[in-house]
Length: 353
Ligand SMILES: Cc1cc2nc3c(=O)[nH]c(=O)nc-3n(C[C@H](O)[C@H](O)[C@H](O)COP(=O)(O)O)c2cc1C
Image (cartoon, rainbow, N blue to C red; front, side):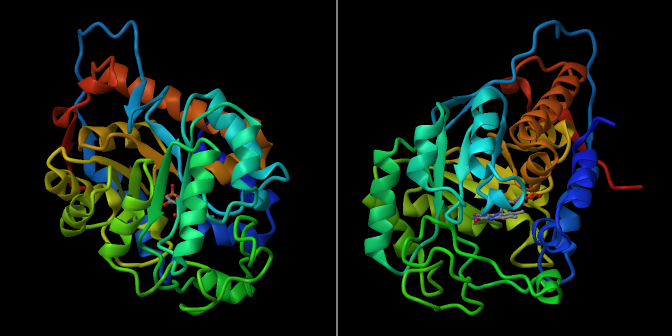
């Protein structure tokens, strides 16, 4: 049967993928409390429907850092799309471009940044870490700029490796992507401070983020922010946007859900930077709730793998279409025909029964 929602896609992917790959994608850190909380927290916000407003024409488009997107759902940077489909990032990129949204390409992409940039027309962001090796960092920033990438997403929550018990039990080996020429194909070091420049520098501080901001004229997006204090520090470092993210519960467990942190982050941002969110987005209503609470747009991570595993490019496109249809229903029934109309009065805090 055709998948009707994102959970159906996950069920198909679970059947098709080798167990260790499914576990790698679906899993999170230690008890996976944050993975689950990211989802469940959406249930603590109820929608306030409004009737008798003209919703005959809906417009889901918005802008993120000045780039127009056809819907407020972007593709989160996730390593190794070839785990789920042989066409990997190419398939994802074609799907994202055809649906008019941004694809953030992971540092650990299984396709080279330049090859992807030449593959189709569509907006790409590049994701990297505060690498220890500044020469490599400079080189990545220049490559991204030359290849036409629209923004640089710096992932800040990965300075220390997580404990992922499914991977330990499966003896799962993560392999470095092709964009690390010196390390491509080698296993990711299990402890921090492996080889020079290879991953996120455990010694990095806000000065390193400032350094990145000064080293590129592309907009800089700080990913992995979970407190108002860190939003404030991001603003001070001069970034253009923050992504409220707990890495889909894959790094530190026992955190709040991202949707719980969003109001604090938006309050700290005071309109000075765009606030984006990822983590647990599986329904159109989740997207509308996040926007109502102040997010400019959201990202999906795992669902892109479920789409890829089910049907490659078509699968990812369908995942985006399903979310779009559900966003449309939610917007129409809340009497909000355009994204700018989705304000705080769309939601109300409603303890889970
Ligand atoms: C398999 C997988 C690989 C990921 N790789 C990266 C990565 O390379 N860089 C990064 O910043 N985030 C990475 N993430 C985290 C996502 O960007 C995003 O924060 C998270 O998946 C959002 O939660 P969701 O999966 O519930 O949508 C990865 C997530 C998954 C599931």
